[in-house]
Length: 378
Image (tube, rainbow, N blue to C red; front, side, top):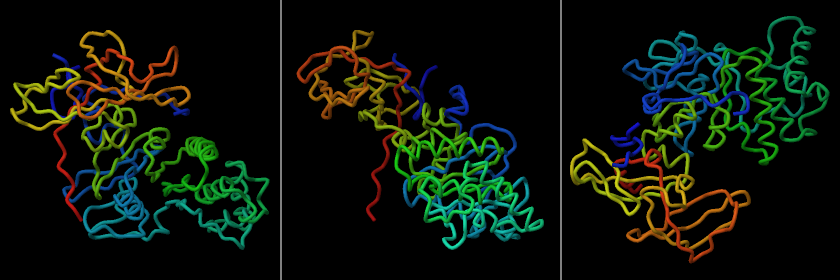
């Protein structure tokens, strides 16, 4: 597999599902593949810019202010789009000619602060959104929803007596009790400490998968998105930068922005000459690009390997940081103004500052992009 266009790999001369393999064309194609979507938001040309298939967990990922929560509010019907349409199961719920009220969309919402009523019991909070059936039937439905998230024993407790993780479970039960066609969650795990967050997140995913619920989850954490999503929609300045499966997006980011978002990078500026870029780390082919094109050669720290592999270059360790199971080295290379970062398992004799070594990289793991323009001052 040869990486011969910007954004491709260069050539040298979750717990609940297994990783999904991806070939290079699927990795490069924004939007990916999948069954008929349960959720679509076409742009003004009619092309779908956000799609979620029935039963999928879709993550809206991006920096603060990129439009994730706004998009969630558009789907929920809390805001109206200025262009485009929102379709649920093929039915237009927002568009130039129609706007379905939020309460008529069959959508469940879980807010960042959970928004539980403090004066109502846990059961009453879950029962609050139920409108159909007798009081006894609504009570039974609420208790069943609490049982699904493991909170039935707290049914008559009040929210202030619960931990953050327990409140999150109650909010999830309340959202799932009416059996929504779509569940929207806005940074639902961000208020929890790390260890509790991991457990609650896994439990939540198990509930969603067991219920077969389509979910759209907002997060700013790329690691979280990789762990929980069937599909990630990476956003930038109110637009979709790339949309694909987690593995495809990580292994084949379409743009330098996407590559930077998911991992720290060693970035080496270079200029295209005769269909290649030459760097202190090696020569990499980029045919079809004009001479003089400014490029950025990117290598993840874990993709650098000490050793005598073909094409290895000489370097020197200038700093070592022990990280438990791994260690990070700063490596000086002749011709590079900035040291390269190398991350590897902390096994065997450590390489101390001052040690000489040879350094290699698998050309298939090198990413090359056009140089990004500097952001305009605001």
